[in-house]
Structures are given as structure tokens and as C-alpha cells.
Amino acid sequence: MLTRREALTLPMASSLAAALAGSAAAATPFAVAYAGSMGALMDQGIGPAFSAGAHVAFQGIGRGAFALARLIAARKMVVNSFIPITAAPFAIVHGAGLAASAVPVASTQMCLPYSPKSPHAKLFAAVAAGHEPLPAALLAAGVRFGRTDPRTDPQGRNILFTMKLAEIYYKSPGLAARVLGPAMNPRQIFAEPSLLARLQAGQIDLASGYLSAVHAQRLPYIALPAETNLGDATLAATWYARARMAVPAAHGTVTVAPEPLVFYAMTLANAPQPKAAAAFLAFLAGARGQALFATFGYSPPSGPTLNA
Image (cartoon, rainbow, N blue to C red; front, side, top):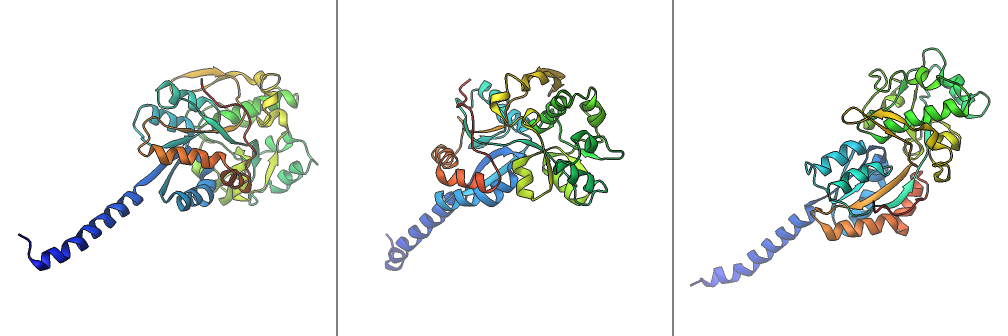
């Protein structure tokens, strides 16, 4: 039998236990994997805004989208939502039975950010202003170019396409090889989260980049024509397809054509917090999420929902 003192303290203990349990539930990380270029948007915009509204502890994981897709498909990474760029990473996750569809939530374009500390900065600025042709910047002696790994990151693959399209657009045969060297050039390839940081530090002069990420970092850049920037979905079949080529993949190479630069969001079948994951997808596609995308330099979504 409980003593009078024990009976009085029992409700207090029960309330404390319930509070602690609720606190633990609220502190459970709401994990989201996304293309590494989205770091600033997620850390400073989407993550805090969704956390405040949904009362969750947002945990972002930003890496190359191909690498993330393979980890998710192999069930070595369990997250609630996945936001890659281009449709190809979705196909990997869909093939593993972990995503039935993906919704376009934003888009972007390829551009060439440059370091203000570079000895070539005046030349790059002249190209950006339209006073010099793009090949003048790309082929200047001593330019240190940076990009990401095409096996793990769509951006690393996309710069290969962009340079091939530039060859065609500027009628400059061999331009891509002269700028990039071999597709897997260790002197140029860096991890995506560090690429723009190296550029800011002046360790490289010029780099591949997505306009959205470059905008967030407030870096100067050279804009590219629609025929080379992969940002115009209407050119996919008529122009971008001309850059179809063999590119490095996880094992060997794969022959593919460029895809428009669309960010797709999906809820995963093994999401630990499925209700919150569904709410997150609605948030991204809704007015508040779209306003944040625009604030951070992303273009509106384009293209249909993926169900392949």
C-alpha cells in the first residue's frame, strides 16, 4: 500500500515522465537528405522554418545526390525525405522500392562562379559583362578550374554536359577536353560541400556551380546561355540531347543525355516519421516553401511529377 507521501508524489512523477517522453519525441531528429548545393537554403531557410512550424528537430544531410541515392537504396541511410537534382537519383531510389513518386519543387541553371581573389578576376568580370567571349576565360593560361565527382554528384556530371554544349554553341572543337582534361581529373575534382569554399578562399579561380548555390554564397559568376546552362526544359530534346555521351558512373561508365536542372522532393517508403515527411513535402510545394526557394535564388519548379 502506498503511503500518503508516495500517493501525493506519484502524480508529479507521472507528469514529469510524460514531459520527458514528449521532450524526447520532439528531439528525435527529422532527417532529410538533399543535394549538397542546397546547404545554405536548408541550414538558413527551409530547416529552421519547417522546424518552427512542425515542432521537429530538423537534421539535414547534404552530399552528392547520386551517392545519397545509392545509400538510401541500399538501406544504409534511413531518412524521411530526399531532394536530389535531376531525375536520375530518383530512379535509383524508385528502383529500390523506396519512392513511388517525386514532385518538382524548384529549378536552377549551371553557371561559372569565380574567385574575386583570382589573378584572372578582371578577365572573368569582363566575360560576365559580355565584353569578352566565354572561351577567353576558360582557356586563359593558368586558370585553376574546380568541379565535383561525376560518379557521386549530378553537378560533376552536368559540367561535362555544359562544356560539351559549349563546344557546339561556340563552334570550338576540343574545348571541353582543353578545359576539363579527362572526365576523372583529380586536379579539378573536390567534394561538393567544399567546392565553393575553396573558390572563396582563392584556392581555385573558376568553378562549376548551380546559380541557386552561387546566389546564396554571394559569389560573382559568369552566366551561361540557355543553350549550355541546362536550365531550359524546352531545349532538352532539341538541343541538350546533342551532348549525349559516356560519363563516369559508380561502376564503369554510362551513356546518358543531360537532364533539366530540376530539384525533386520525395517521401520515402521507410520514413521513420511518415506524417511529418508528408507535411514536409507539402511545405516545400506550398507558398512558404516556394517563397524561401525564391529568396535563396532558386527558380520556380518545372516539369511533371515523376512516377517512373
